[in-house]
Image 1 (cartoon, helix red, strand yellow):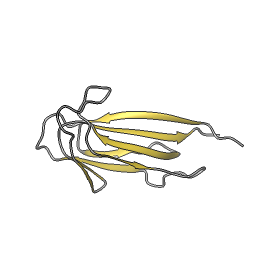
Image 2: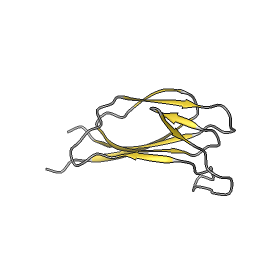
Image 3: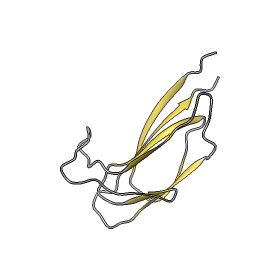
Image 4: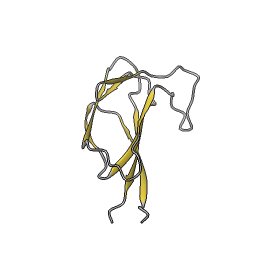
Length: 101
């Protein structure tokens, strides 16, 4: 039986705890601003000026959390903390999640 999935991309500018999409299978987390950011204890540095993404933001460090077929991410939140030492704090999180049956 095939499972239907969808993708959502959200951007964040504040240090706080954010909810993970229900039935999330995988996510890509990227620092697209100019301020260092920590996500669940992992430091993501900002990119170098001159490296631009499609949205004209600076491309910084990123990491992915992937799940195998039919696996769902067990954690319900991610904790985001911007350092406040750079300009334009901006984090992008893209989540792939299964649609309810």
